[in-house]
Length: 247
Length: 238
Image 1 (cartoon, chains in turn brown, yellow):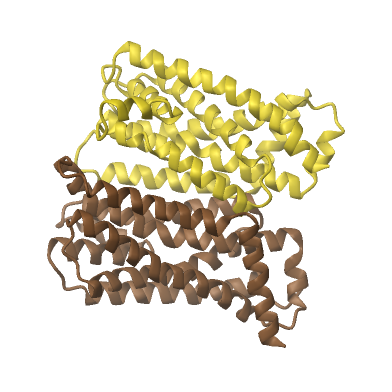
Image 2 (cartoon, chains in turn blue, yellow):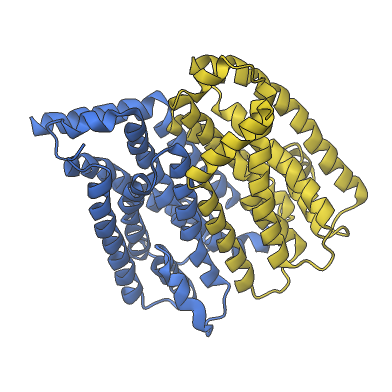
């Protein structure tokens, strides 16, 4: 019964996403972006400034992924709340935790795989970043683990589509802030403040990987701990406010 | 109280109830923080124009769509369709209230950037035209959108297109590529904002092109938005 209910939810989500060509457009745009940047890498006499900007462009792409893909699944939940489907789900034979586990698992898996393929493809033609597969993984996986936190945080904060978009905007900007770590002097005392952002530790790991070659362990552990803490707090409030059994 | 004043009040209340204003305050603060962290002070007019374009100038693009979808879901549009409210009043109210948000956010970013040759009047003109284009584009996008994700997908394509001219803005595209990118209205937005921040950044001819081109887009998108509002948005609301 429970498995059947989970299948129904996945099928319903798939229909909802397929109806609006969401998945197709998202994948299409990601492919187009990756294809365009990969093709630019084939330009033999490209300006030197392009190569200087390449690591920064990769960083922007990586840190903006979790909020963007989290928002796709968050929108489904916000619309369920607005349309009243959430009340129907409250009496379905499926524990709320299973429902959002299924949804966030799909988003997290995608965010572990696609960014890796994308950066490997782009860097194959640009040849700018001397980063191994293992090093890419320790940068990308902690970022992917932010996706479920973001996907659940948006419906927790937002009661309607306007506030969902507003919450998404704040999360997107907050994710981009640590890119300033590339700009501020290494001795600046306020650098730690940028680590308050969900992507702060990962951006610092990426920056250190490119500039100093490591060590990455403290930064990667920090980003994983951040993602786990965020998820725990968000799940607590999400279950209380959004998918509690109380109608 | 006239219909426009009523509609303006309704929009302000709706936007206040949602997280739009706090979100804009946070995003503006983050841009200001970024400016303060920049090693180069004051930042170049080109960079500052990009930061103003990044969010303040185009804040209405996505939000107007979300607002229309919420009004559709709450049956506000069904109610509006049987009132004497004219479509232009609805569209003008959305553009005016979201342009106020653009002013607040854009001017804050500009003031913290402190460009030495700032022309505030030109900044306001550039922000008004940019915001109007963004809001009208958002209304065209939301017409026929079935859900939030459907709208977001449309916006994703439009936003990607709008960001392409950033390449030309930073002189990374030249020749025919730069000319082709000038056809996208965001090139004119960036140019209008940049020349308002530093009148010596481009020729007066380029500044005139930017303003005239944005006015043209306002007229074209305005006509399309009014048509879509009547055909797609209002009729779907019923």
